[in-house]
Image (cartoon, rainbow, N blue to C red; front, side):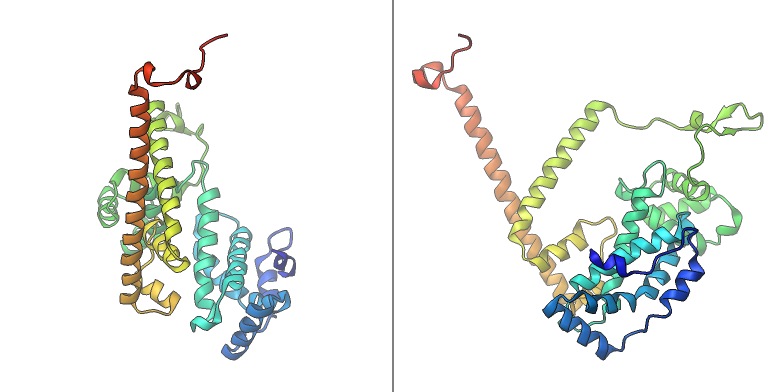
Length: 318
């Protein structure tokens, strides 16, 4: 992305006010200017046109990045990741769809920041399990609604209410709350009244054994391969809608997708249903082929040796 060199940079000390002052110098675009720039960029791919659209939306990135300020990561890094999402949005923006770049860009900015947080937020990685992601993105909002911020750690009753809302276990809510409240505390930190225990002593090893892990990984890999192969029967829009609705831990709503594509909620639902039918049909076809291949292999294995010609048999040794 050669656009990156044109973006204003933070000073070495991550000075946010200085960065904000610089990006305020970039003029905002009128709807007419935005349409003109986007149309010409779609035709010519002239990076100077893209630069104008990018710099005029840097304030949007900062506004969205500030929503993540409580996650304990450098704001400069969060903004930088948001800027990468903005660049992707400009590159893919289609002005003919009838909505503003800011509406479209919000998707890419948020996705880029979310991915960064999930990859780097915690020493113990968060986000590998859909339940953890759901709690991660909703816990702060729900705590605020319950008035729990001023009370320190969640109480059991509050954790139970949040667990019921998110359809997760209370213990998972409490564990995530501890991570969000304490950040990546040293596992060797002394705890207890006498300071004679370490934090690591209280951690339960609830991981599955190696055999269970191997089987689980095999099943997930096979499912992923089937879905990925079957997705080839869908057009680009169907793939995007299925991905947003079925393959993300925080599924998009029909309303938001309708706004994104300039379609009604019902039309998006129809596209989703049709795409799922095509996808399920292709997966069934692939599974049946796989079963037939297994049957052929078994049939071959069951043949008596006399069924093979001499040139089909390989000697065991010299």
